[in-house]
Image (cartoon, rainbow, N blue to C red):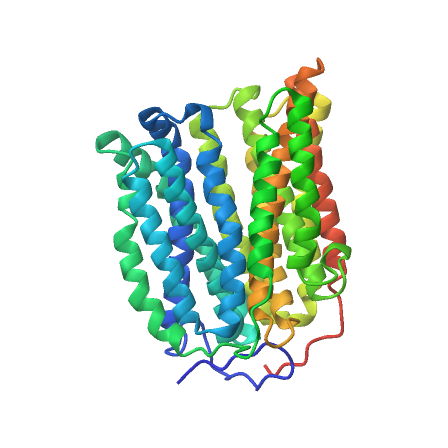
Length: 472
């Protein structure tokens, strides 16, 4: 028997004893957690082995594109899967992207040169974008509204084990055997994911079978190219040429993104568009501050790489704690308190980020305890807000638009992360080349993230609306 989907107040009443671990949901839950785990593991593992593989196959001068080669096709995969999952079985869409991810692992692992690695990473990225988009669409369709906070907390936990052991395992494998096994070693896990997810995904019906193909796929290609131009321009010298290339990228980014996201997203129109914007700005701001906090700790904070890793691990754990807290809070108070929780979570991240920004800007210093305590609070805050934004967006998604809403949330995350971190790097470089200190440059870069988080709080407050009518 298929799980009863509840998307809005027009849905049927939920089962009183339904759980994400009951017989209707168990295989979907396990498969979805494993899907996010494999995406998390490859990202964290690659960050560890990237210097080794770049040295081995000659890519030091193209180091940043090891990551960008994954990011840009991920945009296309995200949008494509979001469109297709509305018209076709989620099992079919998921299998296609799982196959792409597997082939990407094979190509990247066997790469004889850096350019073959880029091809493998691009195939991986397309697959990963589609996997994530498909899982979110399934979460919207297969779980009752009151179960979504719990499944979102469970998928957040999928990042814990990779953050704890992923870098260590990848480093050990690269040193003892070869960095190539960091790619090949993912394939057995992918083979396990398929039988766990596909039968249960096959029971879920597409939400908009009669929908005609639209221009989202073409627009996603334009968006990927424009994002690539923007990122490439940040690395081009002289600055005047780089600025022209980045400006051309931004000129393509803005109108394309507006067309890909739900109408009203960039003005935080209540309720669903505001939730999507809050999530993107909040995640982007969090990523910017974290990136330049790590830079500051290692560059002028005198903190070893091992201790910096301790901060990141602690933050990942506390993110999961925050996710479980939001699930418990939701069970206790219901949907009516989600906007308050969303704004409160991002306010906590903002307060932590602003405190760290002040340390660097005023005292020209950063200390281990400040990073550990301050960013620990940020981890709890992002854990509270990030899945809550998903719950709000899904419950207010118009019927038949679950796929677009799913892809929109991932898309705005990718956009905010890449553009935010990239612009932060420009601000850091600008400060250093204009004679200011590295500390001043790091503070300037962090200020961008702080501003994004302030806007995320404002957008979160705009998700308040009439309470959703559901049966508990």
